[in-house]
Amino acid sequence: MLLSKNKLIIITAPSGAGKTSITHYLLKKYPLLSFSISAATRKPRAGEEDGVQYHFISEAEFKLKIEANAFVEWEMVYEGSYYGTLKTELEKSWEAGKTPVLDIDVKGAIHIQQQFGPNCLSIFIEPPSVDELKKRLESRGSETAESLATRINKANYEMSFSHHFNKTIVNHHLDEACKETEAVIKEFLGW
Ligand code: 5GP
Image (cartoon, rainbow, N blue to C red; front, side):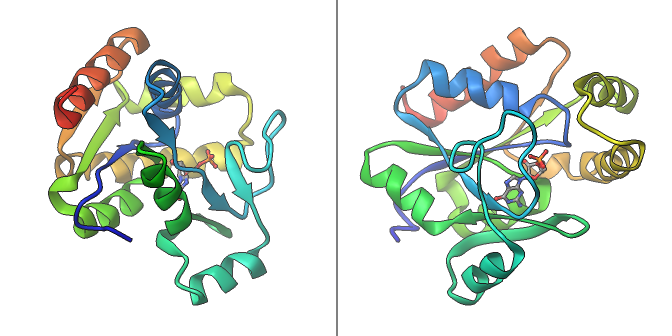
């Protein structure tokens, strides 16, 4: 893997801050960006498909991939659920002449930054407040009371890492946050 030459972009944030919507906006508009599909052991949500949002695999398969050194980084993001960035996903993107975009958690983002240094642009999407984040997660309707509490606790912790990243964008309004993110990426890629 040409770790020292190829560029990549990380969009990180607490869950519910809007990073997935921002990532979708970017991927739709720029065909030279490609989504890095992570491997994950959680169950697909309604509407999710294997090989689209994630490569949904079993915990046993995930552990085999760890042993085979198939990940650039991996984390148990939530208790019992593993998520990881596959080397093959990044390679596929670079081979196609594209720049991979990673939608990953804060710890994974820090690990990737350490490996890629200046070839990595890391953007932290910050929710206007934890209260607002809670409202957004509740309206998504995909969380139980327990998983909501877990995500809020994790969000508080993750917010304390915002200064580790190249750029922080506060998502007051999704449209504006998309435009701001786009501008930072275009500058990084020299577009
Ligand atoms: P969800 O279960 O809501 O799809 O994602 C949970 C969290 O895992 C999100 O913050 C998402 O960005 C993060 N995530 C997704 N893929 C990866 C990955 O490959 N590595 C890491 N470290 N986090 C990931």
